[in-house]
Amino acid sequence: MSIDGKIAMKNGSSKWITSEFARQNVQKFRARSSIILSSSSTILSDNSLLNVRDYELDKKTLSIFPKKKFQQPIRVIIDSQNRITPEHKIIHTKGKIWLMRLKLDKISWPSNVQQILMKENNRKIDIIFALKYLGRLKMNNIWVEAGSHLSGFLLHKKLVDEIIVYIAPKILGHKAKPMCVVQNVVSLFQALQFDFKNIRQIGPDIRIILSPKNNNNEHNFKDS
Ligand SMILES: NC(=O)c1ccc[n+]([C@@H]2O[C@H](COP(=O)([O-])OP(=O)(O)OC[C@H]3O[C@@H](n4cnc5c(N)ncnc54)[C@H](OP(=O)(O)O)[C@@H]3O)[C@@H](O)[C@H]2O)c1
Image 1 (spheres, rainbow, N blue to C red):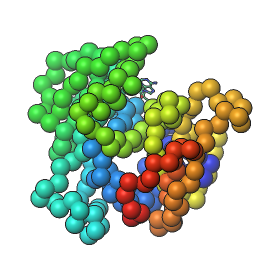
Image 2 (cartoon, protein in one colour):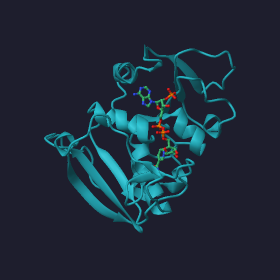
Image 3 (cartoon, rainbow, N blue to C red):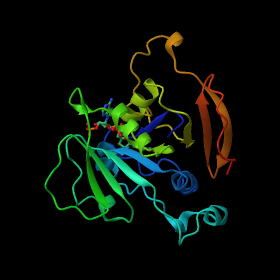
Image 4 (cartoon, rainbow, N blue to C red):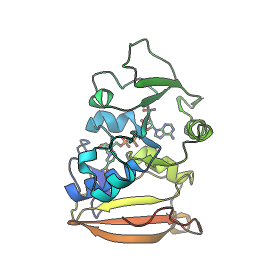
């Protein structure tokens, strides 16, 4: 994001706010996750792949995840309105893709793509139900790459153990999209609070790792 906390322009374009070094660093976090969680809105805006690209991993990460044995994290997309179609680039990448839906379509999807029926909450997917579903499958390490609304909801519900942000020395202005839209924060007293756990320069950008305040969980992997 930018130093004024923006993740995309008003028209949705976000390629690229941060540098290739930051994007390469993201690959390591993706590789360590069981699930990469995103939304149809983000896929529609960016036509993103959200996969791990081995050619972007450094030697150390490749030694932990050797190419031959490596399994792509499952990409889970919240898609209540069946907006993802076989034409999206992500569908043609290796690895499992789970489309969380309220109604299954009859499209014949490639074998790596599965539609999963979710519970409804207010005409949207019940995100808590979806997370519990993943938890029951022992998918415990979820890496979220989403826009303002899904991220904001997870923060609001205190479902986030760690925030990892890459900040580019740019200002995108007040019309650009914020990192999160969080409900019910109208006074400083209600601000969601975090502790800085790690701050590091990555190329021209900085990476900040934060954890919710009063959460004593230790960082579960060493700095990389
Ligand atoms: N710079 C970055 O690193 C970065 C990363 C990701 C995205 N982005 C940008 O973010 C923008 C998209 O942001 P966005 O806010 O439009 O989309 P978003 O937050 O990624 O996703 C919004 C969608 O998530 C689902 N959702 C959100 N809150 C929900 C809730 N409480 N209950 C159930 N479902 C919920 C809904 O899906 P349904 O519509 O399926 O119901 C909703 O339409 C794009 O421009 C993209 O480029 C930037």
